[in-house]
Amino acid sequence: MDHVWAAYNQEAKEFSYRRYMADVTRLIGENLAMMTHGEYVISVWGEKPKKEEPEDGDAIALDIIKRAGLKFKEN
Image 1 (cartoon, one colour):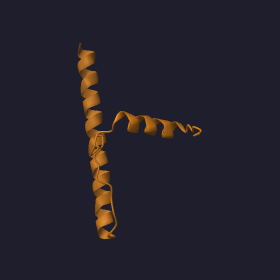
Image 2 (cartoon, helix red, strand yellow):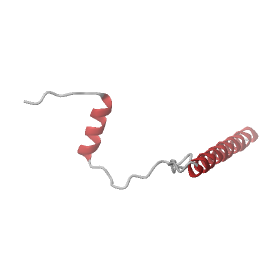
Image 3 (tube, rainbow, N blue to C red):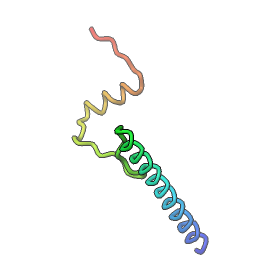
């Protein structure tokens, strides 16, 4: 059981470190963009981007077909 607890603690430390480094890198990028009047990406490591509208089944199927590179002949 000690091994499980040690593995959990190690994983938590690694996640915290990665999150910290991602935040620091993002802040550096934001500061550089502000100094040069540029644009920067607003996202946080470990979080999935939120979609504004849910997609219906047809939109999902078309997206998969497009990403797979499939083409269909139309009559």
